Image 1: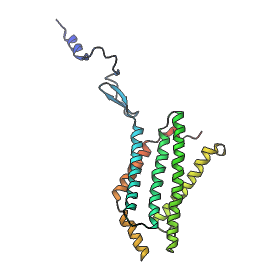
Image 2: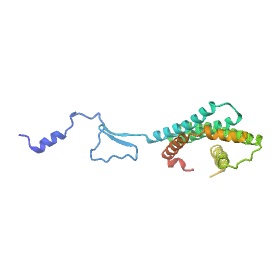
Image 3: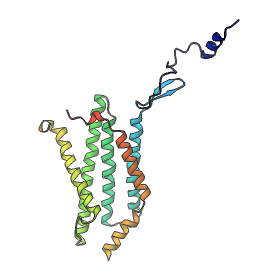
Image 4: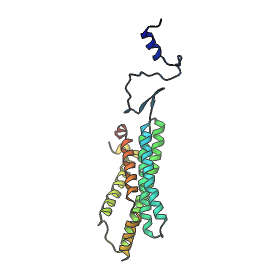
Length: 223
């Protein structure tokens, strides 16, 4: 006769007795989602959250840039078109160049990521110079004052920050020892053509969440 205790023990036994080929885990072990591990019937598996955040950054930046490029390509050409086109390129390249550094682990990955980062930031630098030149020339030809609107002022600040970041980054990488009527119609055109608030907010939110979530604090240390 089988005792109740033995019956309970038998019920608790797995159907497959020889399960040495399966990952072993304890049913009493708490599920830890903070380190990217997820408990499954076959054991604990690693879930790469940095990859998810990287996708958010990429898709958010691509959504923003592709929307701008689509709008720019759908209207009659005039010189100003190059300003939003190049500035969208700035956002896309800058986010990709920054995100790739957070995913590198091995020395080989770090070297490859740094080379990719240099390429993306070089395109960013050239694009922001070009975008700034286009809008400055466009306003000068129309005898308009520069940097009077909030957009113009924030754009100037962004332009200067990118220049400073590029110079500082290049110095750290290459010389690490150095540091331890018609005008109104055009304005209305801009507002009407780029009046897609949900796209801009969604794209910015994806980039923000992906960038913050994918930050590795160890990468921020200066050695």
